[in-house]
Length: 220
Image (cartoon, rainbow, N blue to C red; front, side):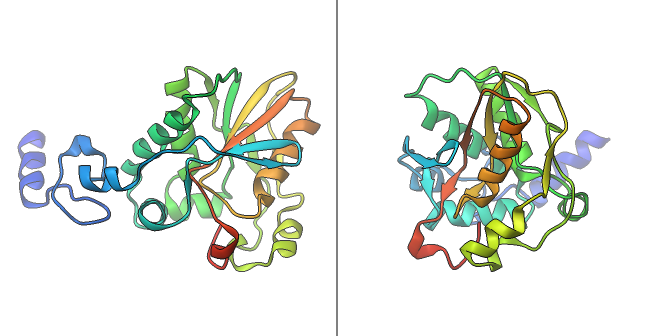
């Protein structure tokens, strides 16, 4: 009965591309082949930050910007499969030797509101592809703060101080930290600092997209 009901629903309400609304197969994970092609090429680019470096396959614009928005704010959780695949593809020219993959955490209030941690879903999928352990609770957001995207550069760094803490033993570990977007790098640098102070050996980070300076009026 449940299978019959599901089949009926799929006929009446077929999966559609998150960007162009074209009917797609369930195994397309929310994007039609045309929109997937529009997202390429995937780049192997690293942004150098204090105490870490950050891989970003895309800049935050065009098709990728629309896909991230649909993922974060329109409940298109299935897009995480594409983001994880693209990030893995970006790593393909580098040898990775990480002990642990972790994600930038959300506050409990924001988690209840959205229903899932978007960076956590991507981090878990990426860790599986890399055959590296994933920890959901390694980093914890201990208090709420103002939304970063409405703040100036200096305000972002001040706003994020003391927000995160490390909840597990990370001594001597090489860690890959995952977020969705990097703008000023304030969030990633604060998480990195907490991990290093807790004894990990090295922290690299990776995001889906980097907001170029001329585009920084929008969000991180």
